[in-house]
Image (tube, rainbow, N blue to C red; front, side, top):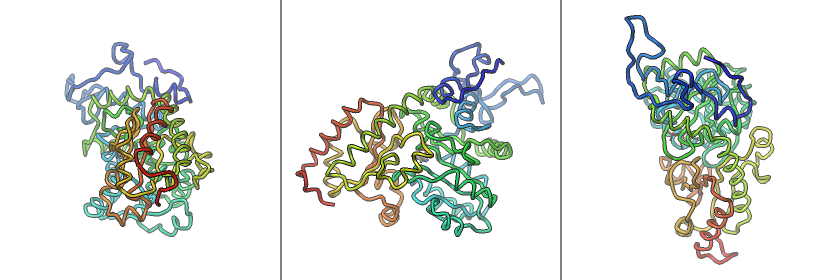
Length: 397
Ligand code: PLP
């Protein structure tokens, strides 16, 4: 097959990566191959495919694209982001110690705490990975993995990927970065020293709120071969339909991210100046404590903004009711703007004490900013704030 020179530009990569047109009668877009099984000429004479849990042409094209996009040599596309995280967990020996960034996504926390501690004997330390001393102090003889999430969900704390991966390498500890919030558009952790990238492709890769998927990507051949064995064994693979949708979504990643991230910056500035807001978390605002790290590490502040409103849960409910374009929904990363009430949604499996300890309050809202016109989004927020029915200057913390 003719090989094309690989662009370094994500806009081009996202359109052309994984293209296997010549393997599919020169179809310009990868077809959906739904076959579960592939006819073999004789025993020991498999073609490229034998059974779709092991490999499938549509999934393969999508996986090649994901690997290229993140700068890896291997990707496995899974049925969800959580299935991808679970595959990474299967790399670890029994009774392993995991160090995770404090404030990781609630579903990751649930997998670690409510499952892996029981089924795999795992122990987990939640650490501020930016505090080198705390990180080093938390190392144990059986520490097998450092789980980095950056920016974190929902408070958008950043982790210095290059620094943490360097320290991990000195101690022969594997690193995995959940790159869901940033996506390869903002940074490529494998090129910054990470061993593994995990993604919920339900977000920016798919981009249209119409699929659930995940991926594990690596540039390490030994890890690739182990991950492939685990994928085939546990079988939590993406369906050909979802692989097709995600590959289709990926092609517009660059234009979507450009618009979403610039819209998000404007929304963050607007919220920061609004009297009904107690605090805003957005990495590229100068007020964010890791603003410098954001400038060094990310291409933008991302497309998610988090804010804690003044007032109580009733005023928060009035605000949500007053929104028109921002819809209340689980998830993020779609072309449409969404808000998420972290306390009852993404972090609903944590007790009030557990989530308040990481800074998620009853009046904390996560805004996933879409591609709509920024004037309409700001107008939407204005209208909703007005419907909170609290006079200016009378917002109670
Ligand atoms: N990681 C992060 C940061 C997430 O926000 C999510 C979902 O919201 C996941 C992982 C899990 O992905 P999925 O919902 O596709 O299983």
